[in-house]
Image (cartoon, rainbow, N blue to C red; front, side, top):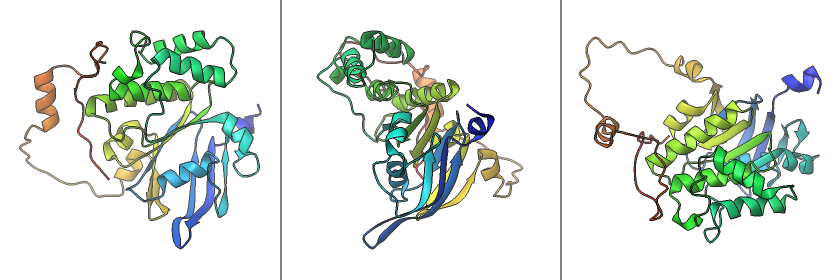
Length: 276
């Protein structure tokens, strides 16, 4: 690999437009994603986030503009793009009848990989699911299901992964489990593009945040850069009341535990979500 290739963005989007009949969803979208980083595409429902991901993952063709993933043009070389990516949608695509290990083995076999059972065991260990690997997925908590879903998407070691609203419908405890998983992915060199409508999710995870509004990127920068867009509020005295998060964590005492009981999932919690 040349130096130029190494420095090139893992994802490059230039002037992407997309309409559905008379509805213009994307109106000239531009952004770059650096390799090994977490990029959050933040926006309200209907802003065009999922449409953008579908274009980048070759599931949908744009009306105008260009996009490249891992150096491959999504229109000219869709096959090469698909070999370079993995897509995890808004809902976990796991088989409830199978065990966690069987789900992973099945995907590894479908990808014609050698040693599917070794691959499955390695991913179960990597995602802290070894003890639950022999259980049917129907008994998993929401966070465990989502982690298994992401583990399945990593079979074959794709350099780029798309996560479309990965924590939609999850309880607070499950959200933290998924957040930790995403952080680990980027730490191991995977490029992550995630869409979300939750401000705290983008704030916690992303190296860069792009705000998509009415089909265009209205701001793109680091969290620090975005915060500088507003003046600092001067406060001389504030009496801070405890938040629900403070109360909950004080009562529960611990976070980050994974339910591995045979009786199935239990409820726990983490930071409350703030919707965009």
